[in-house]
Length: 68
Image 1 (spheres, rainbow, N blue to C red):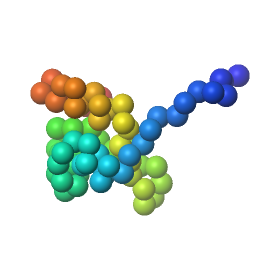
Image 2: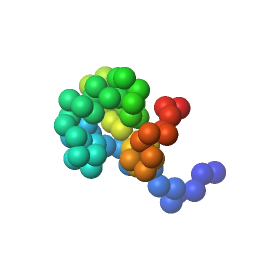
Image 3: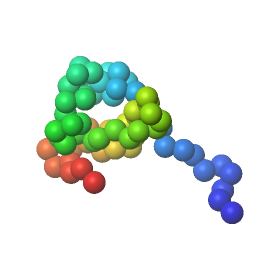
Image 4: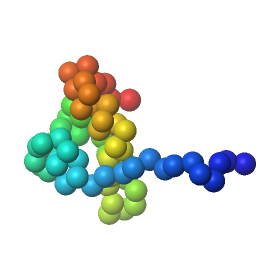
């Protein structure tokens, strides 16, 4: 049985990602599409989010970051 206290990954909207990265929302979408920053995940048909852990890893070393 899984731990009941296991924390879920924090998911962020494009505007939140843009804010913490210091870039525009359009740049978030464009960079994600080009693969130069983490790609979002589809939560539902009309909802897309980015994993905070992936954004933090990218911010720590954007030049050596690789998409998984």
